[in-house]
Image (cartoon, rainbow, N blue to C red):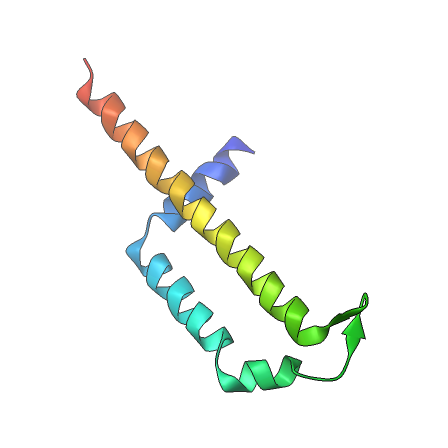
Amino acid sequence: MKQLRTQIIRRLRLRESWIIFFILGLILMTFPFLHIFNKPVLLFGLPLLFLYLTAGWMVSIIVIYLFMVASRHDEESADEKIEP
């Protein structure tokens, strides 16, 4: 489990990951995707578009959290290398 976490953190450190997630977020907020979910359908008593936007918001918070964990890991490993 620790090895998997280390691999995920290494991948999230890549600058390209930041760019990819940003562009993906922009694409998911464009007209075609909003139009797909803007249907008169209720899921769990809530409109589908509301659920889509809420789920996207939650996923973006999780992604930002993972990036912050990765940056803290970088800072901690840099501090360990400096200390004698």
